[in-house]
Length: 423
Picture 1: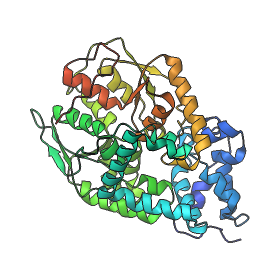
Picture 2: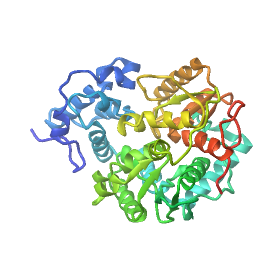
Picture 3: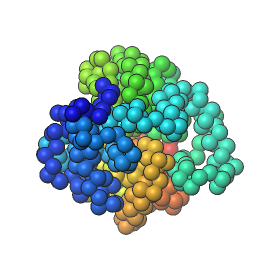
Picture 4: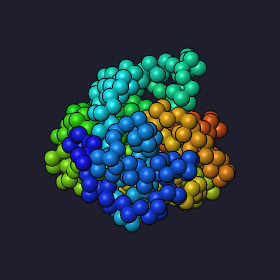
């Protein structure tokens, strides 16, 4: 029988057949852990894809439900003996669902994720509006899922100048030039993370350049099935970000997507070889003696592993290296690295599952007794902050290291010192 898939982006037979149905992925899958149902496991979802490929099932409502409830955390890939490329298969099947089951929600999301996130002026305007909502405390009138998600956003400064279009010379002996991916919401909502990244890298001898012509990395569009937009954004960034020694991102989800540009644009493989997550690069610089280490302060930092850092890039030790070098003691919260439930826009599309996973992760942090939390991804940070509340400080590991570097040592208080700007 003919395949029920109709697009070129659809999962390929080789991808699906790589699954040997062993079930080792089951305990590592957040939605299987929540429901105990096979159809909400990687194995079950791959079986559903296989059935459509064989023409014995269609892309119907049940198929849509099974695949749309996946967080895309890719924890299954890290434990899979068959090396199933689950992430690419999921993105392909999401493109298929978007094509075969269009609705108003998906059309709106394509405009927002495929176009809106690449429009810097629109992002500035939207961020200014959100800053007003924060100050006027208007979040109470929003739907609960949106209100919960936005409660994790840092206090915004509508007058803040982003990093796109700027460059900073190196301090001391020149080591090379790096291009910084400013991203979409990172530049507007998480500017202090960029400040810290630029500060640390220039101290290490790098010139940091953030081309104005760059755009959103395209990860959210790809994850939601908007393949054409993801390819267009990737091609634009290949042209904008090339020409330096390294490309650096301080958002784990963005870095993971940049490293997979070989799938999204011609020439992407060579580009991806020069991409580094900031935790990855700075840990190397510390190990090489290009950046200093500071004595222990006796303060604990709870470490949350973003899925696209731990499971996709297999970067685990490096964030902890930064935290230790900054003078803190890393404290583990979850040896399995189970997803926190943020997963891009999952907290809005699947609010109940997202809330359950976020609450579990918050409970794990609380159990450590640490009031300081390090996470290297913006969505994870927002999820943690929305569940932990104001008694906890949630920051990127690079911020902790930059603060120690700028002051010449780790703090002796509760770690709530103001971030020192490198500008």
